[in-house]
Image (cartoon, rainbow, N blue to C red; front, side, top):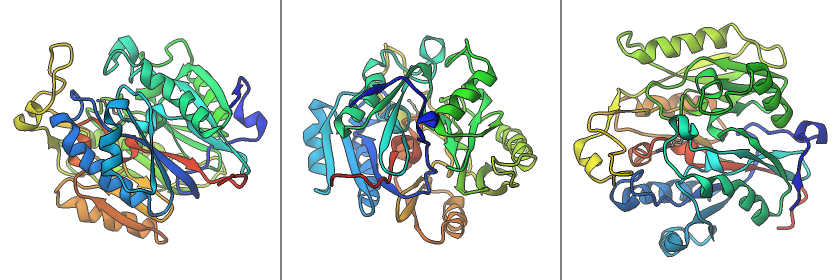
Length: 369
Ligand code: KQY
């Protein structure tokens, strides 16, 4: 594995869309007792259900800490590779490499990670184990790695159509906790040079009360070139209404990198989801303080789905819109089976959802397996 200091775009590498064919997917076995209730018991069950579905159509690698290796190995099917790796938490989207490809081979991008805002408004300290995961994973997979550690970025803050268009939010990438020394133009350049983009569409804000500072992957996602879903509510009294309306205006008045209008499909949100007192009691304190308060609104959204080679796995919240979300996505992904993940509330309590705990590795031809 070589550490590269150049730019993916100059080497002919780019990040494909998630709906392109995958080689596999990386996840991290949950363990953090102040993120996941009751010693991560329920989260592990939800992760296992998700992993079993993904593993039907692509390779799955699960990283587990030394002390959790046996639990992961016992819970997961034999076609899933479990590797020992230390981590601070379990958000593979944000701490695993972003993979780029030239079709023949893949390379990883090792962004800097500071737990969603570092000492400014980050969610835990320390985060050094998470920050080392991208490079360790590249080493393990024997893929060369672009060293972009000076640039703070989580995978959940970007989406691409694989055809030159990148989606992100100002709330996250222009916030004080990431790269305050860089201008919007500099950030845009960095994204384009690393991901193979020609145009960045900046939405203003993400889902209301999203502790990632508004990650794009919870509010908007490409479903095919020039088509996207947007988390939506018709309830004008909900603060989310103004946020989603603003996103809609921007998307509808933008064209993508190829000059196409973007067709936006509204994906209804569930009714606001609040954490219960009992759920809070299952969470350990962090530095003597609770990580969640009973009644706190969680950033529930159906947009936080994962596209595997043969399925699209969508969070479910026990809401009347669960089925609507599955049906809308099924119409947008006619060649895949759209599957609702029943226990996704157990992932949501950690602060994210299905997309946040997965990181795809694109398909490439020069493989040894
Ligand atoms: O949604 C994500 N990408 C990560 C959420 C982190 C939450 C930590 N409690």
